[in-house]
Each structure stands twice: as structure tokens, then as C-alpha cells.
Amino acid sequence: MNPFPIVWASLLRNRFTVILFIVVVALAVALGIAISAQERALRVGSARAADRFDLIVAAPGSFNDVLFSVVYLNPTAVELLDPTVTRALLAEPQADFVAPIGFGDNIDGAPVVGTIAPFVEHLSQGLAEGRSFTAINEAVVGALSPHRLGDSLAVSHGHGAGGGGDADDAADALEAGGEAPDHGDHDNLTVVGRMQPTGTPWDRAIVVPIEYNWVAHGLGTGHAAGDTHLGLPFDGDALPGLPAIVVKPANVAAAYGLRGQYRTAQSTAFFPAEVLVELYAVLGDATAIMSGLTLAAQALVIAAILAGIVAILDLQRQRFAVLRALGASRSFIFVTVWVYVAAMIVTGALIGLVLGWGLAAIVSELLAQNTGVAMRATIGGRELGLVGALVALGLALATIPALLIYRRPVVEALR
Image (cartoon, rainbow, N blue to C red):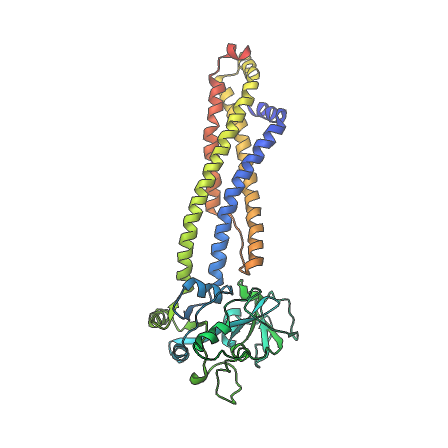
């Protein structure tokens, strides 16, 4: 006998209850899928954002603070790097280039970041339009910046929309015990170029010559008086302190050599990847705990649903007893009930997989808009394994109501 017509009829007979059970299973599965897919999207997006920041050198302190300030442009108060270290780095023969990074200003909340043209080229891998800056009041905007070439931009003091640690802190640190430096004027900037998308918060930044950043905060130009060229080489005696420096080592051996060389009492050096690995380790533990709790919650949901199904099937015991009286075997009754329960669990799990994927995609988009880090939620082996484990558990538990109906005597069921 074919059990599927009876299963289909039973599903239609209790369609409201069936839909309710499927929705509950789908929501339980979607929660687990969304957590798993979002965690991976966050991990991949943040790692990709740090790819082009080979080696970061900064003052001794928190690696995380420096990483979030330089790579993710998150306003954080950091100490300034001693100018003597900057001078040594700028003359470093093992580096392809050394890029000073300066903060302290914003345009409508978008950070204004000071650096040198080679770093813009390295980060963008070629501009999308226009050219790099060649004058102190010119700027290159990120790929997602609303400003267009030729726009004149008024600069406000303070890093990011919320203000915070900036070049003023640098000046204060340098002048500790002395007279506070006078903040220079913030001349308007003219947009001359646009970067390629980088998938980082730099896509919304306005990048200017580091000299603009220094002049706007009364720190000089980094060059001798009368020298108006931009970028390297700088005058060692005129260099101010810097929040951080990005170094592009000549090769892998040079990268490890420079990291060890600049881990001193005056400076620290680190690869962004090694900081992210520590963060991922913490994130991974949290994700494992969340995944375990989610799977346990899903199992409880299925157990609760099965309890409801047992009650429904008990109301239909006479129908199964009639089938037995008409000659249906016990195994046929077992298979019919098992398929009936499994159909709801599998359908709910598949809907939950799609729903969780969509939920993770929405969360990724919202996080990308808030952080500037490009994220893309995908379904991988871990999510499929999670759904598979839940379905396997559900199918195993589905044998319980099937066995209850299977073992019930026909005479008793007909009463």
C-alpha cells in the first residue's frame, strides 16, 4: 500500500496545525542559520578589510585600539608614536613604503585621514576616477563617498561624527608640560580623485596629504621651511608624532624582521591578522556556545512539536484502527505516521534554511552600512550540517509517535 495519499490527506485535514508546526520549526532553524552565517560573514569581511595593512607600527598600548583606529577608522584615543621611531621607519631599507596615518578631522561625520599618495594607490589598487592629490588642499574620496570630483569640502575638527582621540591628543602628548599647540585653519578641500571599492571603512573616508592633517593642527608640514613638496622624504627634525604608521615590507622575511625590530619600549609593531586571530578565537568560542544553545533550543522545539503531534494523532486513532481492521499492516501504520511527522520537520527545516540565510543577509547589510566593512552572508557546510543534524534528530524523534500508534491494539483504538 502507498502511504503518501493518507499522509497528504492527514496534512490537509489539519492544515492549520501543520502550518503552525512548520512555522515554529522554520523559525527555530532560521535562528541558528542566521547566527552561524552572520558570524562567518563578519569574520571574512573584517579579515578582508585588513588585508592591505601589512604591518602597523604604533606607540606601546592596545593592539585592538590601534587596529580599530587605522583599519576600521573607529575613533579611539591612542598614544602618539615617538618621532624618533618615525624617522627610523622612514629610512627603513626593508620597506617598500612607509605610510604615516593621521586623524583629527571630519566632513559631515566622514573621517578625514591623512597619509601619502603611494598608500592610497596601494589601498585602492588604482583610482576609479580622477588622480591622486598633488597639493596640500586636495583630497581623494572613498568609493562610497557622496562627494564628486571638483567638490569643495569644508572640514570640521574632530575624528568621526562623535569626535574623540585625534591629532590634538597627539599635540598634547608631544607638548606635555608645555604650551598647547595652536590649531591651524582647516582650509577647504577639493576632491580630485575617487578610490576603487576596498570593502573597508576607508570607502567612506576623505583621504588627504598627511601635511594637511599636520598643518590643520598646528604641527607644521613635516618638511623644512619653504619646502612645499608632498610626501616622502620628510625632514626628520620637523616630524611630529603620529597615531600609527603602516609599513609595506619588501618581503615576508622583512615583515617578521621589522615586527621584531619595532617591538621596543618606544613602539610596538603587529600584523593585523594576529590581532584578528585572537578576536576570532573569542568570537569562535562565543559562536560555539551560541550554536550549542540554539541546537538545544531547536531540539526542545521539535520535542514540543512531537508532543503536540502525539496528541493530534491520538485524536485520529480510530482512523488508523480502521485501516488496521481493513488489512493494513503494523509497518504500514508506522511508516504512515513517520512520514507524516517527517514531512513537517523537513519542510520547516528547509524553509528555516532559506529564512536564516535571508535574515543573515539583512543583518550583514545593516552592519556594512554602520561599519563600512563589506560583508556577505553565505550558506556553507556548517549551516548545512546544522540543518542536517536537526533533521536527523527530528526524524529519529519522529519514530516515537509512530511507535505509539504502531503498538496500539486495534480493539482499544476503535473504542
